[in-house]
Length: 537
Image 1: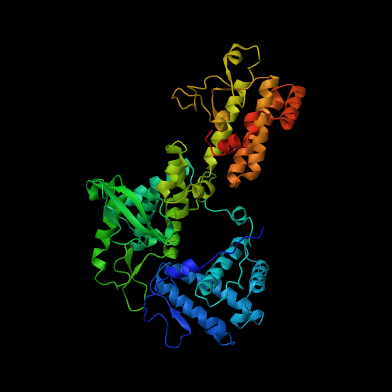
Image 2: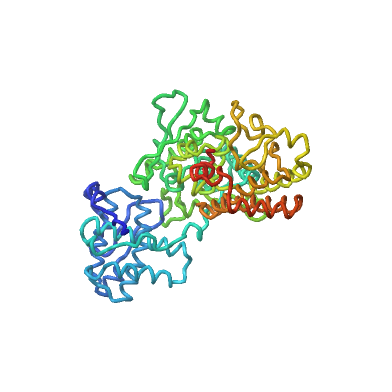
């Protein structure tokens, strides 16, 4: 069945373009950007205008000006659209003698995708360049500069991009502990005016503390304003940390505790409100010298390396990344493998999400609410098992092997245990992972890390076990995350090791065959399978 093409008409009706003077220079060949989170302040279209591509380039200039004026996207994002997408699209057009808008159609877009694939850059970079270029073309379609009947974008031009481009992983428990200890030392030094680094380095440390506590993304963090803390409308002792989420076209809010004494809090607890109030005090004397574009931004400092002396500016992504690396080097932070710690704001966000996951007892919706995104986003991109969790899982499994060896059908403990869809359980109501509400535990994905789990050398028990084994194999193939697939593989390996070493080979082979041909109903029922996959059985 042919998939319907996306309609951009509704997006066009929502765009309100205010007058924006001084964005384009008099020559109309260079777009001047207002101050933004990037260090780029202009984009020059001259190289492509000089080779006769005016019919394509002029509408794109208008589109860039329109985007900046509409303020529906971050200026830094529009900069990336130009530098990370439009320039490569123009280069492709120039190389293939495409100089008229009327030449742009579905075949041209597919050719551009093929050209990117042959460019030799990383797969993720190819995808990023395509997305930035597509954003500009979509704007032209929205405003009827290009026809949506002719310009058709492939539904998935870079398949399996998420699997081939691995994002930042959450910090392990010991990694987070070392990071927090180092951060606290610098925070105390800043609060006592004893920090020996630059102003930008001090601000970055304060930013890391805010990111650690709130999980806020990089760009919203960089763009916090001086009025970002607002009283909570209902809770007197709480404040709201407000920021803009451009991608979701909405405002983000995080509840933070109001400090009792901002000076003392900054030196001890370092709550978010105390940190922001400390920043406001440090930067207040600078605001009278700053221009209108930066005066109300939170992370303001004096840049002394500018020609002509002092200049007010704010922390940029490059400054943030550079000072994070200096922080890691200064404290000699290492990961759990003993290698230099790779740190960025994204890792702190994922660390917080996984911490909330553990503290909430695996409540996916609670994590999504706290992180200001959808539950599906949490599951697919944030809730990844840390290396430490994987080690703990392995060690617990190894410890349980010794317990499983002693159980035979004649053992009193095995006879007293209750049957489960996985094996047997010594205490399904009050066991290690049981809810302890009077109801039997249904968390079968955790049986192999539970001390109440019993595995017996019995045909019926092994039939249930290998029925579960077959479910895991099928679920592993459909899992959305490489890390979850690895976790399933670890359980499968553990089952193979235990049954292969401890039980009769013929009995095991018969149970495997029977489970493959006719698994127990619990693990072949699609409703049960769906519930188990999401931890709701």
